[in-house]
Length: 407
Ligand SMILES: [Zn+2]
Image (cartoon, rainbow, N blue to C red; front, side, top):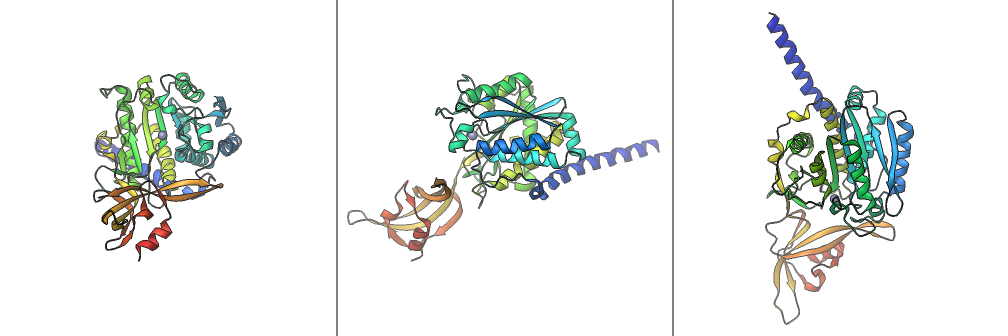
């Protein structure tokens, strides 16, 4: 009888804990619009970010501390945000590539949620069991120009060993000062990767970077793999099949690889692509949901039960997608060359002109694209157009091209 009763309680406990995890993530997802930070363009500047952080410094007074650690080459402040008093330190850093803003927005969303729900059991537990270290927009000079590299033209993700840029020195200083157990290295990648050979766009790519050429697993990297496996489970609830594994070649100059080697269990999260969402606001939302759900799992010491096989089984990040493929169009040349039938691969680039952001079509491939996938396929079988309208690497007016193809 006693045994039966305790079994009942154990089963009830297991059921409650396993059920409660799903609603938190789902609640974060379903109520996102009620707490998301008011950032409406992915081209926000360091000055705008500073305003958001100043706002949190006030609204989260007593919970959040903000400290300027130093300045970028051009003098923009890099500020570390610190919350929580728990023993497990989790370090988030974002936008070391200036044109990769998705996770910075998601971190502001996360702080907004914490501000609005600071008295909820989940947030209280996160803040008592973990210490959050957040260094958003590590490369503000690059962000100002919406470019990958710092103002020196250096890719700071190849400066982790030499530490020549002030931004790299500051990022390393947080690692040295706090020795965080877990690190999340937050980036954006080209939105046109697929998951392995499938036609599914990679919405998110994950990686537990190697710390040596042999890709050795030690306790630090294994812990990172548990974190990555937990993230696979969280993301899969919303984008099942759209999660890939990023290229795992060891890069001795990169931050993720070095952080792993320095002792912080590091997971790279790359926001990829999603159909009809060039500014990646849906992926931003998923990042926010994943950060908070992961923190809940870390606070409950549950993430290390996630099966590493879920991470190992991810398909490789594969370059196999165009925004648009025009299929089997016949190109007419001058008298010296006979007509030819080809597929056209088109990329839609985001470009800023006269202060406004436009999407601009560019022909990036021409030939047999039957093994590639796309967000939009235009069947042009039987249609002949002048070859001069679609030169390789040239910008094309899509409205004009669509008109030509419809004739
Ligand atoms: Zn990057």
